[in-house]
Image (cartoon, rainbow, N blue to C red):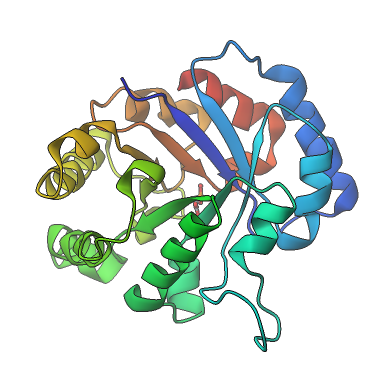
Length: 246
Ligand code: PGA
């Protein structure tokens, strides 16, 4: 059995005060006994404060450097993230891929750096609107997932995958539960080609305009193990009800 996981992605939003308030309201309304594991990925500068708030939520970062240390102005290493108590890190979110030109090879290096530091990478894949409309979803996903699987140094037992159709992120559009399930099953099949047992254990999250009212149907799909939540994770009430649905 895979434990459901819901992870909020705050993106570049909030302030120190909002970080503490939002974490506090979420924490007050989730229980240790909840079936689902809950985490939030906050901006770098608020990570330490978020960890120090000592909530039931696991704290994650939104990206990480592929380098260990040294002359890389502006970068934050995986060791630094682990050092402040961070447990998760998003790798290859579509906004990083599209807006900051991150490509498969450096993303692989980031994944390995995260794992070496003891962090769990949440590796994001997803097709663009043009690719979706051209019917290339499975082709794109296969290429993105296989580039990750091609490196035998990646430890699939300490990794989460997230399928986020780029056209669904922040747009209010979502893949239908059936459409999403097909892609999730396909991803699991690709992983099974490397290891059947790891594929069975691997958590695959769905992301892209998940809200309280569409979460239940999405999470009910056999191969959808929870969600990566952007916009709705900035609203404590909406985020909590999504967690309850998982
Ligand atoms: P959204 O974002 O829920 O606002 O669509 C999802 C994400 O970017 O991870």
